[in-house]
Length: 115
Image 1 (tube, rainbow, N blue to C red):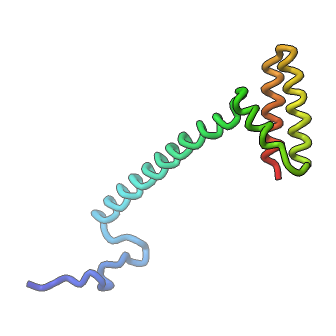
Image 2: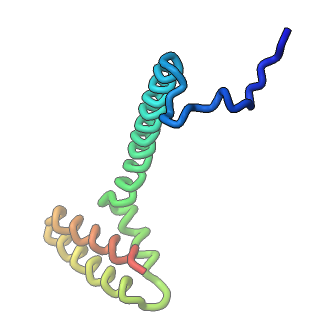
């Protein structure tokens, strides 16, 4: 029984890239499958990350308290802007304008994220 040398040059594709009809069909199948798998993995990653960022920006009293607690320490331009936005958010909440308060909270969150 003669053994095949899998590392010989006969197994390499020719100059035009083809190895024959049956190899091309199989290769095309695996390329499509790989592409579908990569697209599906990308979709799962996008879905996995989006709820985390949405939860971070939720307009709740607990999140507002965390943001206010993080405003201590040295004054940076981001913290000064966040304090102004939180003051406006508190003012809107006392007037009963929760939509405006949430908008100001979101801007305070973005200002604290700036470096």
